[in-house]
Length: 605
Image 1 (cartoon, helix red, strand yellow):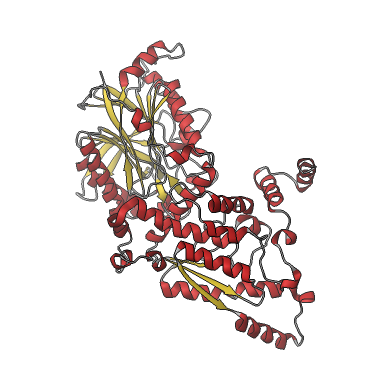
Image 2 (image 1 turned 60 degrees about the vertical axis):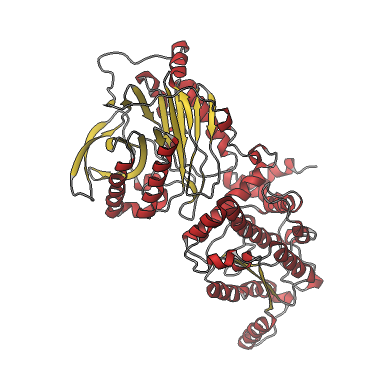
């Protein structure tokens, strides 16, 4: 029997954080030793960080990546490991995977199909490697000053009789999968080091191509992914996967707050061998021109059979919930906020809380990001991650510790209602965050008087409606920025995608902030999510009942006098209709005329 212990690694890295990235990889390798893992698949570009963007053009990025790679070799004894890094070869930058074993670099495999749609811009920095192209490369070890020659190209590997191939991230998402060529070469294990961002429903797609790849190729298939808010723009959900013979053996934890997750499982390679012999479609590559793998001696510690069924259940119960989209939104944004907070070394979050849906959702997510982090990490790991705050130990000893991390302010004018003021206060009270309340009427009056003097006339709602509305939203910015600076906090903007799309947002008003966590979220979803959060809520936290005070009245900007009975959907249109228009125009690329025709049919009832 040839049973091999395999582990995909989910790891939370920081672009250009050379020592931090190295230390996290090192700790994962040491943990693998304790678990007896012999084959580890780390994610794509895990050494440099995936989100280096134009810094990839800087020569020091390749130099530092190589320094870290060579520094990690000593921790790869008796293991086969894949590590991702950018490499410069013949004047061209490639996105590569270093395949390492027993303290040696066995070969370098560059990515052949680059991700360049949606949130990805790999073609901006990297060139795709040609299929079937092989060469050699001289790698300079900055630690020793010595140069080492190794193979680079479209290789597969033979480690002590076990053949291993690579299918790097995007190479598995295209119609002509790179992995399809590997079974004919006798490959038994396919490794997929990825940087696959979170999107609703995407995990099910990953599971399908992993299980289908294992079935169609007759191999064990291993998928590894990055974790967390790596660089501020993209959130990765981790979730390693291992499948064999079309069966999912293992699914790792998603949205973990740990530096890395390493869950292992045992794969029976002989099962795949039997499967290939029984596959009518399997055609082994034979002939004189057959490609030769990069071969090296390696002693596998083949194991006794082991049950993996308990490891499939690492899948959390919330992933089987009928409310999975709401749960995923909560999980993704809270992890993203916590990572942004600690990586930017901010002391906390600051929010202008109006008592409306948008700012209330942002306040809930900011608060729960810290609660969830503490719950999952425990006191010591939480303290370690926020150790840049010298008072962190003292803060956690306080009953209402969250008040030292989340600061909200209700900034009212004469047009603000008691309903929204109360909604803001009861939400802050339930969440146990710091709550401030101040009036901006004197500031507003001063601006109006100044402009009236310059214009030589009295401003009126009949003639100056939009200007009088916007100045109220805009004067909220200086005070909340002031508070953010005083608290050394991160100001969170509260504008959503729907309102920004049609200009129903005030520049330098609700768009003010260093991070905008719901800028890509439509208002129809937010309206639905806040009701769910108020009545059911995430599995870990339960409902936040005070949110019912937020949505019990129609959304309103409260920028006109009360006599106008201002409502957002009267100013615009129903948010669900706006969402349909936006999706048809942006995602469907429909013309305005076609959108009207389609909506007339869809909304005919």
